[in-house]
Image (cartoon, rainbow, N blue to C red; front, side, top):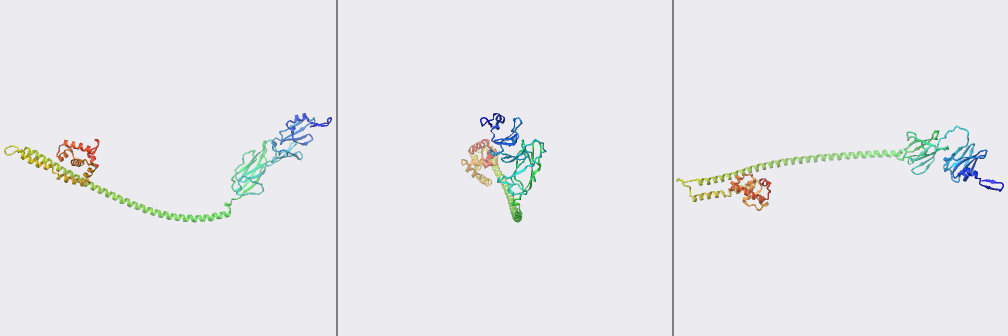
Amino acid sequence: MQFDNIVKRFSYSNELNNALGSYKNSNKVIPISTNSYWFIQKTKIAKVDFDSKGKLKIDSNLLSPLQDRMMNNYENILPIENHYYLIGLDDGFAIYRNSDEPTKFILPPPQIAQLTNLTTGETILPGADLKLASSENNLRVSFSSPYYSSSPLQYQYYLDGYSGKWSEWSETAFQDFTNLPYGHFEIKVRARTNTGLTSEVQTIALTINYPWYLSWWAKGIYILMSGGMIYLLYNFNRQRERKRQFQAKRKWLEEKKIALDREAEQQEKEWIKLKNQQLEDQLNLKNKELANAALNIVYKNEMLNNLHDELKQLKDAEGNKLSSDELKKINKLIEDAHNDDRDWHIFEKSFNESHENFFKKLKQEFPDLVPNDLKLCAYLRLNMSSKEIASLLNISTRGVEIRRYRLRKKLGIPTDKNLSEFLLER
């Protein structure tokens, strides 16, 4: 704005507004010197200098890192001494030095601004001798530097007593430490500019107290509990040893009983084996006796047959054959001897004694069997030949084969099954 003396009123200065650009709408102008001013537009800051000819020079990059960090509508820049200005920020202050004289600058050490308990969110004010409870071992350490730079500072930290080396440089102005053990620690922080200028180390000491379960009274309780546990373990082990010995003795007795039972079982098996052997020997002996008896019958029948043949050839003193009437009488006697069942009944009785009622069982299983079939089964079980069976039954060998075929059909034996083996299984 400019005052027109002719019309006596203010008017816009278009030339100045064009030169200021976006800062023509600044909400606050703060003088620095006669020809220098701070122009503030909604937390954005620019320094404007006027030369002797009235031309202005605007620098909006000088304090660009502070943009949007000043309290909106309450922006202020105050001179504090020659060439130094205090700039109010949302989270603190910044100091600006306005001088063209070269100075040897030392980067001040960063400040540990705040400690925060991450578990509860409470703020812990740092002090000279900071002691924290064991439950406050999750901390966030926030730090800042009382130095303004157009480029952001980098920070490096080191927790002495916990970590073994300095951290990497980072622009992050805080660090979280979780699950810190009890003991004494020193938090060390230093800052660095983008030109490599490094500050001194700022140190704050803190102590994490022992948890309650490591206090002296807790240790006393632990000692008492340990003594009680040792006593209980001693009694438990003694009882367990007694139980182990009892179980070992019982196991020994059980094993001994099992061994005796096994020995008795083995002896019984041997006795049964011996008994079976004796029975088998007796059976073999009986079978031999039966076979001999059958052979005797065969021999008797053969003798009768031979006698019959000889009688046919017998002649009287005159050389004539015997008459048919005389031969009939003798043949009748021979035929009666052939049909005499006394030998068979004796054989049957002995056979049943040796083969456990073989005929009775066979008759129950196959009721269609007739006595001649039973005789044939007995002879086959003794593994006698067809010729011997033919002599016993007083029939031809062909007749034996026919009877074998009929017997196979009555027993329902397939052709691939041996008849004698089938009867031996009964």
